Length: 136
Image (cartoon, rainbow, N blue to C red):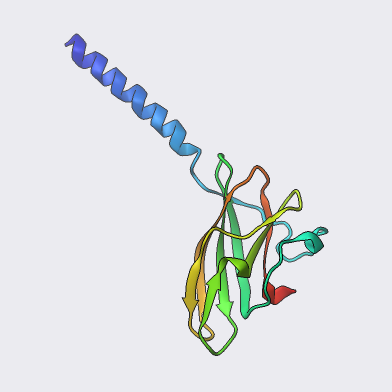
C-alpha cells in the first residue's frame, strides 16, 4: 500500500511539474498598439521586397519563453498566382529591430486571401507591428 501511495504522489508531482512548464508555452494575444500607426523606427527595418501582398489584419501572440508569432490575414492583390515567402513580411520589435519570419512558402491564387500563423523566433522584445513590401 505504501508503494502505491508513493507512486501516486510521484505521478502527481511529475504531472504538476510538466503542467508548469507547459504553461510557459501557451500563446497569449498581445496588444498591437502600432497596427494602424507609423512606427518611429520604420526607416531602420530590414530590406523588404515590394510585392503584391496586402496585410488585411493580424494579431500578435507570444509565449512567456519569448516565442513571437503573428496570426496574419494576407491577400494576394495580383490576378496571378504568387508565392508568399519570408522576405515578404517583416516584424518590427519594440527595440526598433526587425526580423523576417522563419521559413514560409505559401502559394496564393490570384486575389486569394489566407489566414496563417507565422513564427518570428524568440525575442525578449515584443512585436509591435508587421509590414509587407506593399506598404512601402
